[in-house]
Image (cartoon, rainbow over all chains, first blue to last red; front, side, top):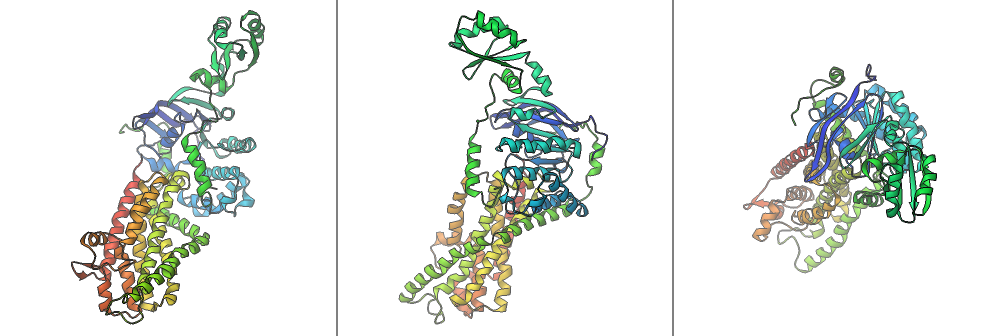
Length: 335
Length: 299
């Protein structure tokens, strides 16, 4: 493990920009990730998350700006960066026709894990993700969750400084997601690895030490989950009325800030939700049909910063193609 | 992008962990493991080996028998100099081996495109290895598989009346390898520029099939119209088919004079087998160079 890096910066990004032709996917972002933390990159599909991760792991070149990982510049020494990072992609990148152990052996060989340590490290990695009893089964017989666990084991096999995970739990059921998070949240302590991950699941972002919220290629805010939630003052009140348009100015006057329309409701922040509700009902001329308030969540932070909610059902054409492809070519590949 | 490295953490620490010196040995190791993975998969998926038997058998049994019958009623295939009993099926047998090599090579290389989009290639591309290893390893992996699929057809030789000799079998192994290598390298070079499987149909229709038809697998390449003669002479596969035919049929006792008449010629001169293999190998090395360059480019 790396020593004496307790509070050091492991990833440093300055003014990073990436254009694909006329489309600016990433529009000048700055961030620093400290050693040993779990850093979350939160944003909707198409926000620039995957593009940023691909630049940091040297699969793409930045159009402008600078980035270094483990002290190595991604532009000048991509091979150096690659030897110090582990990766778990959105799509399974295992070889379905090889066994779990063979997939790890391939990885250990390519990353030049010393021959004398290989068998032992592979056994330990399989043990960690509870796949020891399936080590010699071909990966195509694995469930989605098992494949993900195997990929996490593979990602740390060569003891990287940083483990990048791009949407590590996408497409998995909630129970499996919790299981995966069980491993991930242990990793920094066990392996001394820093975790940089993207997600569009708000509940997962709560596991992170720090979060950057990204939208339209720009970072909207960076902080701990609590710091970000503190940006939303007090409580979030969700109101449904008979006529939202007419009610909005009245609510604005009562609450002291403009409500945001979201999915047929009005949302407004108030310092004290319990005191606000009776006043709302009493002083609004439009009929109030329902009202609820809660402590702010990251959803509310995102809504406040971007004016819209993250929708999990956003699926682009790539997702559709991916599903089609898995059904069509599934046999020999990641299945 | 030439801003100096704004290093924030222990560059010295990072440097000491990395190996000094050459990249040749790590690249060779990487080529080996990429090749090995292909072979492991190939071996594990033996049904594919059997499935690829189907197409050559169709050509040999149905196409071959059908045309043999038609040609013999029209006065025989080999012309006046052909020995009695020489049939069209014997003529296309080496061509069918070549066809199997051609298709297997390109298919094996095309798997890269799929791997790139949704699979294992990413694991390889982010590894700390030189990208040339990916191109070379894949080309050698495809070549090995295609070679196996071509050579296994030799077990059909007795059934189509092509006598095998020790010399013809030992000669054909390197010839099949050179063909498989050149075509796999070409496939890898094409695959290196393809970002989706949509282009695959194009490659099939506008490259693989024309290369097959113009290669001389199904008919001799002499006495063709000028435009077609030209196309056959720039078809790399033609330089692989011809040596296979010459070697196998020579071993089966076909007279040289007859073989010469069926051979690939340039300006009326029969090209020696060794020269054909040399041309093919040179082609393979050039396209592999293109593949290596393409793999090294980052977007």
